Figure 1: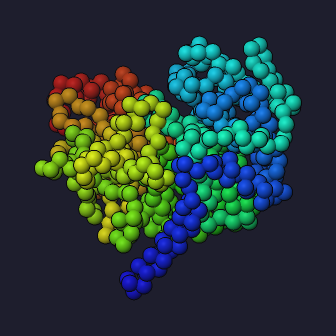
Figure 2: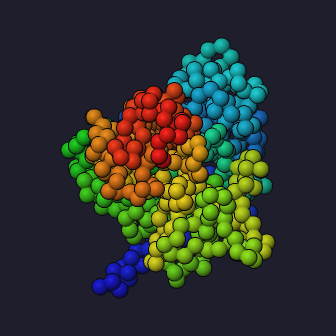
Length: 596
């Protein structure tokens, strides 16, 4: 029976892998076939078919292409040339994809700016982009104006709304631009190694970094998911993720448009409208990331959640405890979880749906993949090296840092990195398995099992050491979320005076009254002593990035100081369980009078 089950899994994996490789095998860095050529080919094949729907408006492939052509000619009219940058600072809307697609036709790079940023982080992203022009709409224009004094250079603001003052009316400017494709000679001498987009890291631990997305990398993502999902021209893919992020903007859009399907785009995610819109639009797939599925699970029952035609949900970051609920409660037949990063060269797919796994590399294919796990010391924050100075591979069941071998000239193994060369170099490990080799360090801790499945453990920097043991914030959070009423959990380490390592602290969002006594018992039963959070704080809502990644940096800075922490704050007393940190408790903690 086990042999038959394994054979079935291997077959599903092989079929998924073949679909994907078939779509990406022709990608080459020196090719003159660019991502805009891929999209143009789809336009020619499905010109009169619907391509994208947004807020009641639907455009065909031909109409989307005509829109893109106007932006291409607009850029030419400004004398923007190959490699120059235009910043795009808008929420999801119909024009978003058309803008960067159109600019790519004339070799112009688009910097996709997170529309949730304000102030210094926004100015930082604009400053490092090198752009002299920024496209905004009515929603983001006031935010840009507030950040303008922090800019290092003058930027011309183009607004898709009524212009005021120094603003330029982009809608008006486009009226005089041709809908016909620009002459292909305008991108003569360009190759797939040229940059097409700047996509920024989420900034969960600091200011965002700009990752260079080459035409080749964009092709890998768009073509890769066009193959991996098995989408067809009959599919309608619901994209509620921000288009400034690769998962929604490249993987989700690519799966639809490179197969003749269509994108149903929403301005932003809404748990209330999610299933209603999917049913109304006849969607067959949706793309997820991070906590999106948890928000759905925590939302009240909606009859539309079982009336849909969804056949596949694909994305990354699906927690193991949410996975079965997604399939059973919402009756989603298939889940395609993947692992990767915007800037990295590591990609994993869980083609056969093993719950909790982020991907798989069977033993019989291991040598064909550039992915390995190497032993990592959480305390020193360094990879473990043997007497020969080389890294030591982590075996099945062992936690290790995921690394991807860098091979110049191989589209799937290249690492193009960030605009900041120093930041790029920090992500490269040298002399890993042999002298002179180079591997991309993902910054993620994973483990494998005997069948070659990969499981996410934690981000490096999130895992901490306490009482001589490594504590995975991800695994602790999963156990805390099993307590009734805990809707969100963010676990991190905080420094405690006089103690080695970092103590665990959890920030929780709870539904209703927090029962500290019952929670104490739950923690005692579910977690070993060293992994039990020493401190707990309650939040009305969790601060997240635009892609639903939980921010920890401010929480870590607050620590467990009641002068900094707003809201209920608890300490895990070894005898009483979780007790509120009053001034008396705080004074005892500071004086070292409480056993930790």
